Length: 126
Image 1: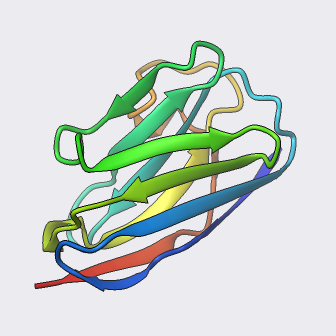
Image 2: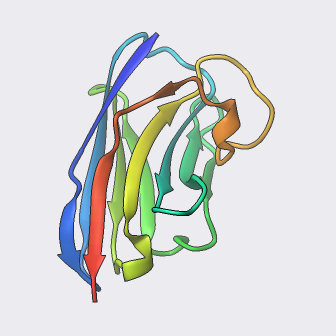
């Protein structure tokens, strides 16, 4: 089992940037997906960005493509989400997730993930 701890959230004005980090401990040898998800009040959880560890394939939601960048520091077992040009609609709780065994769907499908962090709040004001 993997333990995931997010950090880096906060409050910024529209147009600003934040860098989220997800520190993984325990089992860190996943061959499948890791990703970032977000959930705003009253909305369903949305896949923001994901990376397939084995292939290196990166996925982005259309709403963040060109603004967000997912990356991983293998030596530090840390997943990052660089968020630029933030918009008020990016306001949400952001979660890091790891797929520990194969599941159906792409790396942006929340149902395939087995391990989740506690979340970090991102608030973007107008």
